[in-house]
Image 1 (cartoon, rainbow over the protein chains, first blue to last red):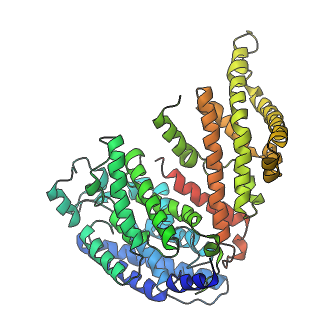
Image 2: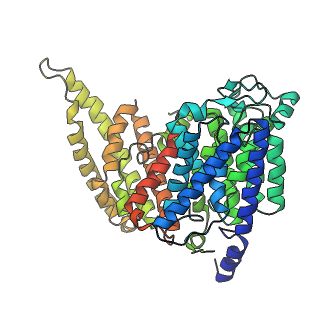
Image 3: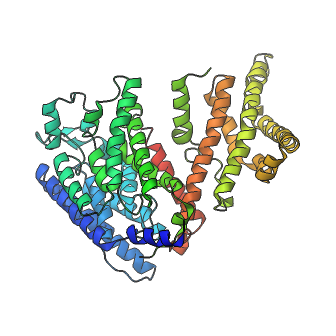
Length: 309
Length: 200
């Protein structure tokens, strides 16, 4: 890669862009607000606690390292995404533990915002899932009745994919994590995200298309273990993660070609985990695995390039 | 011949579920020797692939053909399987010496490319670790061969991931207390966290 292309890339896809980060933080807050109507206003409290923990930790850590601290929207994004991935009735102390782990071990020790390798929100999610498997993995709320259910809609056996059920899914009538319940809202906010060019449209589009394709292919080989290719797009956290988490400019690859491979990899791993592994939803694992594998698709110059802005 | 589904299961298991580095934490002393060159990961993995499958088949045969057979012979002495560790070390040294000299004679270019990584095989704890796990988890010679190949590939996979992460972090403003090995272990822990999620 020559110098000119390098400069172009730097201008086109800087890792930390304050405008994009601010828009992202606002849109995530909108999603949280929508979730407060779907569930109870308690989710807003969860969001507030997570944000205070995350920002406070960042401030404290930068001060301990004796560096100047400048608050920007990047500090809000990790706690917000983390809360949106959680089930809607998580005790507050778990929210604090998760946000602390995510910001500290996912972000700060790699050198702060813009340097993290793994998505810090997903790191926090996985840590909580291992530490409190019941509270995080198996106690969701049914939005209509308000009762506690064990599974998200993906693992619900009564869900067969009729038109009525699909509309119910779109309007958020099935249990899921906070951010992913109201699929229509995710669509609208995600469309704004792509329209404002905050996120690269290649990543969500490729994830959705290849998930459908892979589900159809695997469904042929293992009949009965995979849902309908079209229905698979609406289930679980796929939409939310594809639009808001996988597109994270810091952990995703930076060249367009590498981004396509990255998205295809996410879709493949998601489909394999959904159908063949014990875990119900695979996209969270898929994104963080591809965070680690993604750089292998890029030219070495892009990886090593120093980028301070 | 091994079935296709078994093959896929073995693949997923060796890359993610039972990865030698991220699940058993065997062979992590290689991390401290990493020199952030992607080529050296390939060299390590190729050297492992050249030696390990043969060692693993031979140790499988010795374990099932000799050690377990001897158990049934006498009345007084029951269990000879504790000999396995010392026998495996012996096998590793002999086989890797034989293979090294064979490669030197037959493929001098490959030998030149691999350089010192062939010598380091004998001191790599991942080899002995994979052999000991191998005995517990396979039930035929072919499976033992496949297991060794897949485990070596899984080992190379995690090393490659960590090398790429090291490359990305070369110019990052890391906290000085975490620089080097501590950060590597934390990265390894996060990778282990990711991979362990498949199982539950």
